[in-house]
Image 1 (cartoon, rainbow, N blue to C red):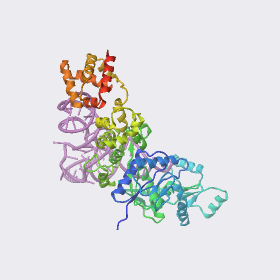
Image 2: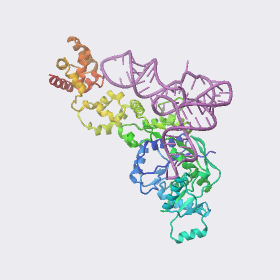
Image 3: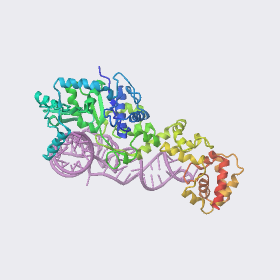
Image 4: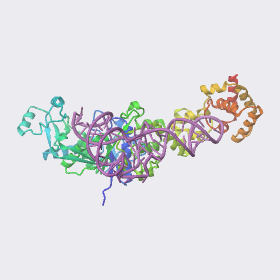
Amino acid sequence: MTTKVRTRFAPSPTGFLHIGGARTTLYSWLFARRHGGDFILRIEDTDEVRSTDESVTAILDSIKWLGLNWDEGPIDGKSDKGPHAPYFQMKRVEIYRKYLDQLLAEGKAYRCYCTKEELDEMRRLAQLEKRPPRYDGRCRALSEAGRKEREAQGKKWSIRFKMPVEGATVVDDKIRGMVSFENKLLQDLVIWKTTDGPTYNFCCVIDDHLMGMTHVVRGDEHLSNTPSQIQIYYALGWQPPVFAHLSMILGPDGSKLSKRHGATSVLEYRDQGYLPHTMRNYLALLGWSNAQSQQLFTDEDLIAQFDLEGCQKSPATFDTVKLQWMNGEYIRQTPLPELIELAKPFLEKAGLIGLPGPSFEKTIALEKEKFKLLSEIPTLIEFFYKPVEVTEKAAKVLSGPGARDALAGLAEALKDFAPFEDKALEARIRQFVEEKGLKAGQVFHPLRAAVSGRTEGPTLFLMLEIMGKETVLARLKDAAAKAA
RNA sequence: GGCGCGUUCGUCUAGCGGCCUAGGACGCUGCCCUCUCAAGGCAGAGAUCACGGGUUCAAAUCCCGUACGCGCCA
């Protein structure tokens, strides 16, 4: 019998969920789903100073928006659900204390009385002598008498974990293979702070074990901590999970992706009008690919094909241009009613809802293949609902030679024209072009500029039909008058 | 400083000793379609596989160095 796969994402609620975190979440989730396993969410809020409830909410909202569901973990910022609850580390301190006592009792950890000043001095000396700046283990060898003495002086202590001094620790990493670290280079890690609190590496090990994690998928930056964590597993008599360390995501300039490269928070991408499916697909491809270099995936495809071994070891640059292409691709694939639903918040924000004019079914359908972002929808269709705003280019067209006559003539020709419909309009207007002995462009271009205020836009005659006779005539006359 | 990780077109990547005069995708250029802009179709430019040594009949692929970048120790 094989054990059920269990993976987790364990964010610190000290800010928004950023792109890197989103990808880690996605990969953990995909791996669990691929193997019919469970995906767990755990909140690592032991940093009391920087952790906030708003961050928890923002992170949960981000993951929900991405369309990734979790089987156990927080329900909201306060409560949680699952067989291994609580899933907030601050509520688990008593659990950590129990294992701390066990390590202490077994002589696998010890009290360290060194002050911050002493440690700083140690580090300074080490650097001076060009030795690695690590703890020298002076309290590890402390005699019972030495301990008594320090405690009599009222000295505070932290708890350090005794690392082995010989041999090597091998990390079996799904992505990087076997990575070996010499034990003598591992420090005696502080697992409990003087200020009475467990530290990250300690909590992480205990939770991952107690919550039954079979695979730990996380960022590259944790690879160096992994041998120390593995030693804690051993000391507690536990089997470490399988690890998979993902490479970083970089900004266009090759440095770690950050605020100055633009949006980093997942929710900003939502607000810019990216679809969750785009984010899933794009992020999946940022560091993973199949043998065919396939680009577009359904969720079923992704789940069926994703594997950790196929992940890239080298960092990847986040490319907004490709992201936009993919979003356009998925917007075009979205059925119209659904697209209108998705566009609502953006139409609302642009003040287009409730204005007289054609239905969004018609105008959005007309421009559907042009949207790369949902946020572009209002801009491309607003002239159907709002007074014409003439762009610089359009103004040039409208003041060009013959434009005024063409527009005035058109207004006259279309005044009593029926039916006011695509094909019929095209036939009539082409006939008008011929009557006047003009070239098509001499009429089409000013016509477009007059009714939309732009030189680029939807296919001309269908646009006129949708806009309606009244508006078209009014705008023609208006433009003709202004061109004079 | 030590340790660890990484390095294939501008970008994401395929590649796991001969199929590679290195494939796909985004972007870019040109052409076609056409009432504009898109979308679509076609074509093209673009990578001496970081560099230097080996191993081998044969290396982007294996080994060893070097450089550069990144991470952890803080």
